[in-house]
Length: 247
Ligand code: F6R
View 1 (spheres, rainbow, N blue to C red):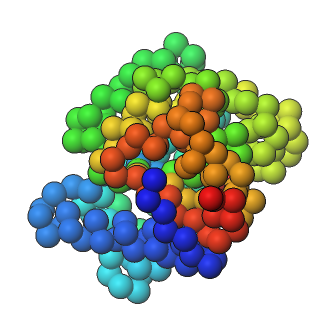
View 2: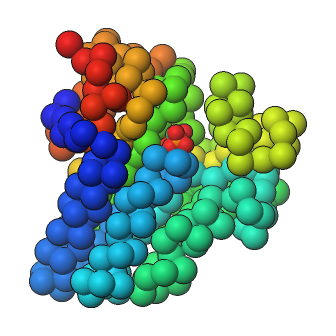
């Protein structure tokens, strides 16, 4: 897997934002929509900050951008502070000129039956938009991408999934306590992610052990990110600490 290593996560984040901005502008020149797959969590926050800065200071427009977020807790209301709907509006959408109808985030505020239908529709909406041009990913300490936990099928599409206990513990910081972290989530599947034309996975700091496994270990469903070794246009963007256990 090609890798770009930066001294700090800030520099890595600026690089990622720059790659996204280049693609948005290129698509604008071609008069085409730019379809972005987006992630939440602590990893992409500085990248979103830089994109907002580029919008405000450099005139980067998001008018031709269509977004699909990777995942959402289930169940959760959109307006809950912890929802990924809230996260995305707080860190990006409220500060740029994207058309509200071009924003797609899995809806965690449905019954389980409705959610199953919604997952099928979500996958279809991605296809109808022409597929994802560039997918942004973080990585869990257990190797998850989106909320595809170890053992997820490489053929999976958008679906309802159980969160691993380790994921709930890692994300408990966003909630009052672990018991408040939802046990389920809606997530794009591994095959949804693999269909993206280009993938940028970012990881900072203490993720070094799982980065080494994902990039240099066997391709296995036990380390979902390892399947990215088989993607033909995927780059890992790391800070020096996250790259420190690479051979
Ligand atoms: C978030 C997502 C997750 C996170 C991962 C890392 O939309 O899909 O896979 O990227 O859990 O989270 P952070 O960045 O908080 O370490």
